[in-house]
Image (cartoon, rainbow, N blue to C red):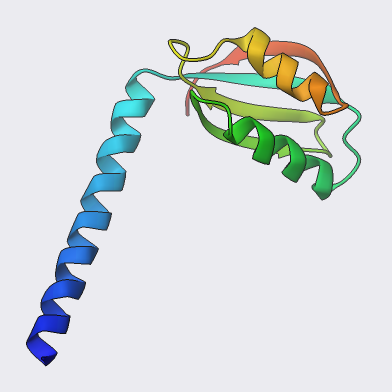
Length: 106
């Protein structure tokens, strides 16, 4: 029974480790990065609200919002979602996406 448990754990670790990396590489090749200037964020709760809701939108890969900087860095797939939709979601949450700027991936 001990050998079976070790085998199951090994298969799990191998499949988790390789699958995630492959998906990220494929998504990055087809992604764009924007900085969205946002007014109305006052705390980490605001950051979390923006991050959580944008992450639900198909085509959004990652979101990092900052109330201190007044922005959100959004990596997305232009074939699946456009910047107008991203602005619409932010505005619909009660914030104001005032400017969208294209950024180079780091």
